[in-house]
Length: 156
Image (cartoon, rainbow, N blue to C red):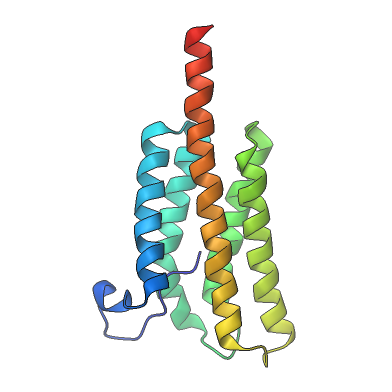
């Protein structure tokens, strides 16, 4: 989960200065609230993990910076992938496949940057944002899916 690129001494509000960063912050808040409100246990777990990753990523960026791979962010993303993998193991939810795919592709982007540090930094970071939005879309779908499951169970 890539949060805004950070610079030492800057507040969180100063970090959110680009449209993609502002969109990511708003989407994270909206999807997290939706998942906590309408989701079941796996959606709530994923929402909390996603929110934690959103706040940890700027701190983790200090461990490595461009043009190298963002090692700290890669570690955060690997942790999120591990949690989603465990959720797939224990819960039968379709949205988890999309979330897992987004996270797996995110780690592949980190691996690609590791394999070739001459990859353009803008493309590397943009791919991380795009995949994060895919993860959020899967999580939002999961909240609606969980709500539909409850509605069907209540009507049966």
